[in-house]
Image (cartoon, rainbow, N blue to C red; front, side):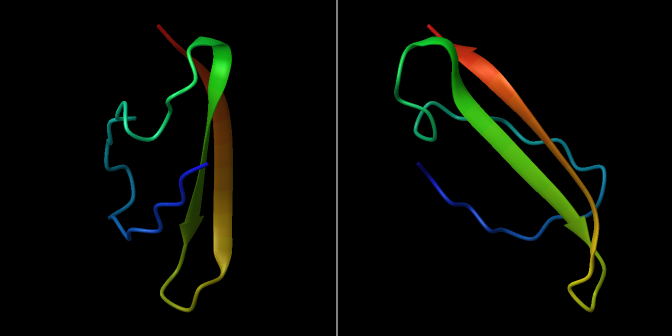
Amino acid sequence: MTWDRRMRPCRTEFMVEPGYCKTAGKGTCYVYVEASDQNGNILGKDSAYYSIK
C-alpha cells in the first residue's frame, strides 16, 4: 500500500504510476481520492480499482 497525501487543485488529472501498484492482476490496484476545502472539511471522495499487467 502506498499513501500519497499531496495537495492538488480540484479537477487536476494524475497518473497512477507503476511504483504505486506492484501486484499484477485484475483489480489489484485501489485508488482513493478526497476533495477538501481549506479548512480540511471533506467535500467529496471517489475510488476505483485498476488492473496491472
